[in-house]
Image (cartoon, rainbow, N blue to C red; front, side, top):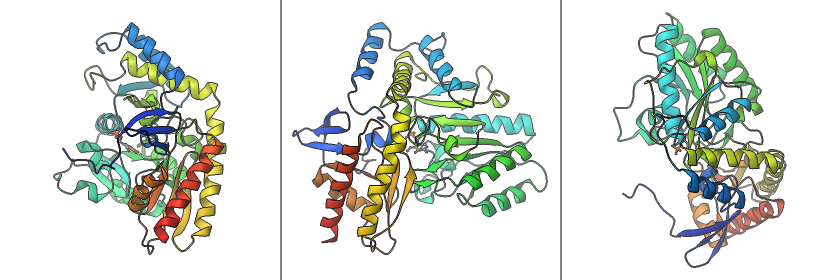
Amino acid sequence: MGTYQRFPISLVRGKGCWVWDNNGKKYLDAVAGIATCSLGHSDNVLRRSLSHQLNKIQHVSNLYKIPEQEALAKWLVEHSCTDKVFFCNSGAEANEAAIKLARKYGNYKRGIEHPIILTAEESFHGRTLAALSATGQPKYHKGFEPLVDGFQFFKYNNWESFNSLLQRLEADGPKVAAVLIEPIQGEGGVIPGNKVFFSRLREACNKHQILLILDEVQTGMGRSGSWWGYEQLGIEPDLFCLAKGLGGGHAIGALLVKEFANIFKPGDHASTFGGNPFACTAALTVASEIKRRGLLNKTIQNGILLNKELNLIKKQFSANFKEVRGLGLIQGLVIREESNLTAQSIVKDALKQQLLVVPAGPKVIRIVPPLVINSREIKEIVKRLKKTIVNQIN
Ligand SMILES: Cc1ncc(COP(=O)(O)O)c(C=O)c1O
């Protein structure tokens, strides 16, 4: 339907961090399906476990017990601060589930007739109507009004902005059900959360009995160098949302919740495909392979290397680049506002160097390679990116 401005290449094959187009041209993939193919492409272990699963059973309804789903839920709660899991198929859907749960919580637990959810400016929570309405970027709203009611926005990492909004809304009694926020803003420009801000946010949520929901769709499942981005911030959410890296390239999303906030009853929410045996086997395999191959630690080390190498580019072309920011293997190279360079033009030109990178807004080049990447490949990303920049500047 023309909803995507596609680049003119067809990717037909992949292995590890490399992909090939239909003409046999080989590209280094620092996009990974946008922070999704954590084990890279065509991973042997993932291929084997999914083939095995396909030979057993692919899909059954949530009307029945699903052992693979139970095993994945068990793994997720054992490795996080939460107690219960709802499975769906995407990030937007996980956020939709969180929004519904937060509204019910506001209604039942705080006695609010029209509960409000606070979210950040420049956030990104997905394209379905409620997730879109929660997204603090007016450019995505345009043409789709009326939006879903009940969201108000504060400035990310800005305590004054958050606190004054909260105080104003709660002045005459409870109005706010939840805060929905990314630990690192991804689409908004790779902006890591500030520890002090998040710790004050956590305290304020406790004080007002407001749910703290983290959108870990892009950051979860090891991308930041810990299983969950919130570990990097030194806080625990009441709920958090996953998708992208969870299935390593297979559609699965999840809402994880602490027991006290689990207010859903049978019939409150559902998904036909959510948590089917195939998707859950993918996620279980991704989880065990990240652990077996020590990828969390490697993500930290490779993230440090990538950040350091990108900083050399920033230094060399300081008239055009102002900052490198990120955590683990989500890193952004930030172009100066006054520079003629745009993220889109660099991403497009990088194709000539057989490199895949993705913009995060108009002025940030986002680098989110598979977690299986090695130091040689990291250096190759930076080498190709540098060549692209030299070509753009000249
Ligand atoms: C933080 C965040 N939340 C939600 C979404 C939406 O996920 P999906 O495209 O799977 O619906 C994205 C996608 O980029 C995201 O980065």
